[in-house]
Image (cartoon, rainbow, N blue to C red):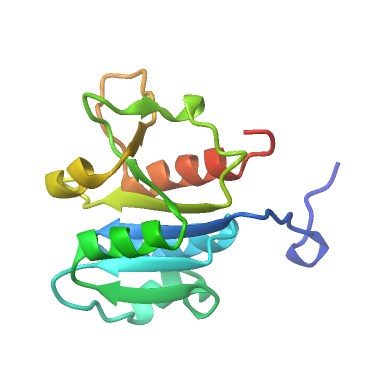
Length: 168
């Protein structure tokens, strides 16, 4: 068995249109990794929702391995308007957050969905409560250790894997 070179790898495709909506994410390392994950899982766009637009600087470009050039980006200031707009465009808006009424991600049926807007939250505060109250679908990743949270990019990777997994 030998490890494949980048030039020897043929990535798979899926038929879903995935948008990643970020609720007040600030850390430039996380933003760079979100771009890299978006590319890896075939997401078409990232929406950064913050009070002020963030500069896509060299650090973000380096961490993303220049996937910032391949993934659509929009920067907005009103999360509820974004959710309404994507919902009106036929996207199923899904928040990835541990809540009293969230559903285990493995129980979510993605197969019939063609348009998914996955919402992830701030590094410290998670997804804003007013956003969670406006969402019909909230999912969480079950955890088995003593910690009650994980880095948002790790959670995003698991979420995108579950969404794009064949036969899910």
